[in-house]
Image 1: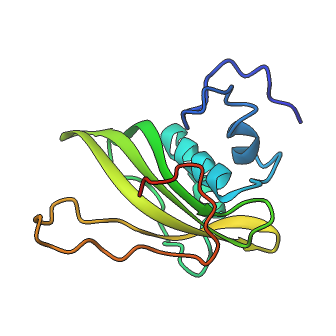
Image 2 (image 1 turned 180 degrees about the vertical axis):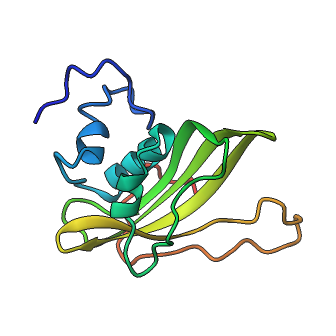
Length: 158
């Protein structure tokens, strides 16, 4: 199935057509090749209200019953900060990102360091480490999730 005629840019921020970027993953026509692709498709699914994709790609061991974002949340931007492993030949990966959103209270953002694993040949979101943005400066940051293989296209940013 080909989606190149879809007239919208992908919400994940790659600048690509939605149909050839995250649309093919959200529709089930293709599987994510990397942890980053899966993370981007999950962001796009949240942005477009395609929550079945979010549910389907959440590891069953850690998946909540309800994957809905809060009421009135509109996703408006994504920035990738770091990628650790998670490539086509890996079984584990980490993607750190910031998702920006508009809420009834105003514009907000969430930074997360997400863990992914390959299960039955498919990438799955396992869990994420979300720093407490309201914590005071003297509060230690939550521990980061590290994997033994370090492959990052965004060196020096964490």
